[in-house]
Length: 263
Image (cartoon, rainbow, N blue to C red; front, side, top):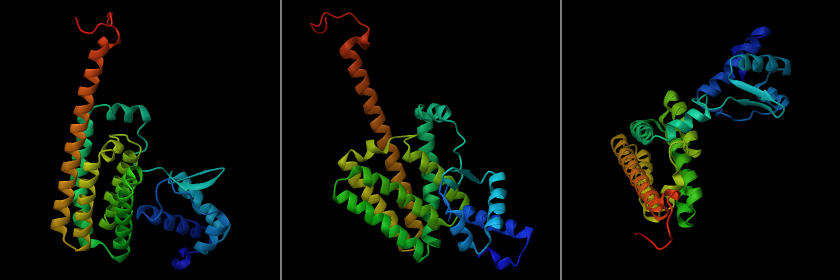
């Protein structure tokens, strides 16, 4: 209820705006998430529709909400101001991909450590659901859904860390991961032996957090990211070798060959 402040008149709109801001900061309202229709939202917040409209306008002016024909929604994730060409340029450089994974390794370890210390029962239940989805998808050999559940488990860990800056940074990075900006997760989950290892590592992190063991949670998260980093590097090297071999077959598509094989 935004009226708990006892602020009326013009200040009621500011109170409404502050309440919605808090929901965005704490991660209750997610980037890009659509809001309820005005009538229903006004009832939920116990304010008049004109007051709500004024509060929403304050947030739109700050760039926190956007409105279009379909309604209002929270702005896109932190870091989405990167233009597509720049993201493409970054993702095309092998050193940047490795730098991204190096950053993820440190932040994942921090998130898992904090989650093991700070997670409440609501957080733990969300982690259980994500792990159950991974197990179910794995059992069905459903690589696409297992990859999606993988990202959602990591997001649940960031939320359980209860570090708001870490949460918003990692939500942005997770959005890039879903879109295949820095590497294609499908290349990982296309390999059954890799999927098996990843599930075991996810379970180890999950169990350490539920056990409230921050040292083990951090250690398991670090091992998971080190393995992921190594496998991605191996896949990239293998693909590069294959491309060279294919070019040798047809002379890079610019050689004049008789079709009798190598001379």
